[in-house]
Image 1 (cartoon, rainbow, N blue to C red):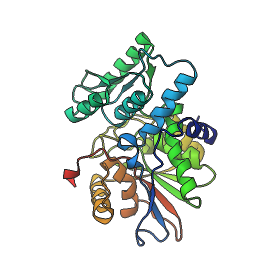
Image 2 (spheres, one colour):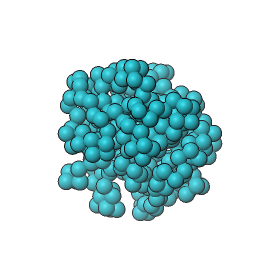
Image 3 (cartoon, rainbow, N blue to C red):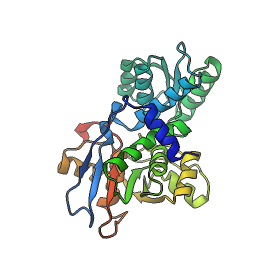
Image 4 (cartoon, one colour):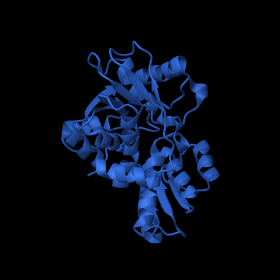
Length: 310
C-alpha cells in the first residue's frame, strides 16, 4: 500500500534531482469550470517515470541494497527503461535494460546513448521481464519495475503533491492508465483533497477490467497508445489504491486519442505521445463531464513521440 506519507518521503529523497513541471490554464470553454494542464512531459527523459526511478534507486541505496558494480536492472524498451537508465547514470551506477527483440531501434539507440547495457531477447515484453528478474537474482542488481513497486509508485505520486501545491483548490485529476503506477501515486497524493479519474484506451482497459472483476486480470492489448499504455493487467498496488480512493475509470477510443493529441498541438503547441493525450481525450469527448464550476487538472504525462505524426 502507498500513502501520502510515502510520497512526502519520496519528495524529500528526490529533492533537487527532478524538474518541477509547470501547470498551464486551459482555454475557457473546454469545460464549465477551470481546467489546468500539468505539463509532466517536460520531466527528465520526457515522462513522469524519472520520478519513480530516482526514488527507487535512492531508497535501495539507503538500505544498502544498491551495489556500485552491478547497479540496477529494468525490463522495458520504452519510457521506464529510459527513465531508469537516466536516473542510474545521474546517480553513478550501471543500468542493464532488457528489451524484446522487436523493440524499436530508435529506443534501443536512446538507451545506449544514455549509457545503459541493452540486452535484447524474446518476442514479447514478458520474456524480457523474466530475463531481467533472473539477472537481478543472479547478479544482485536492484530490480526496478515499470510500475508495480511501492517506491516507483510513491515517486510517481510526487506529480500529485506538486500539483496540489500549484493548484490547491483542484477538485479532480484526470490521469491516463496503463499499469496504473502514475494513477496510484497521484490518487494517494491527493487523497482527501481531490478525486482521481483514470482514463484508459478501450483497446487496453486494464484498470476498468480489474474494477469490474474485483481484482487485476489480464486483458488483450492493442491500439494506438499501446506503446506506453500497453500493460496487460493493472498492478496490484494500482488496484488497491484505486479501490481505497474510489478511483473511477472511463474509456476513450483510438480516434478520440488521436483527435485529442492533435488538439493539444493545434491549440497549445504541446506535443505529447498518444498515451498522454488519452487523459485529455476524456474532456474533449465527454467521456468525463465535469460538474459546473468543477476545477479539473489533466496530467500530460509523456512526450516520447514522433512530431511528424501530428
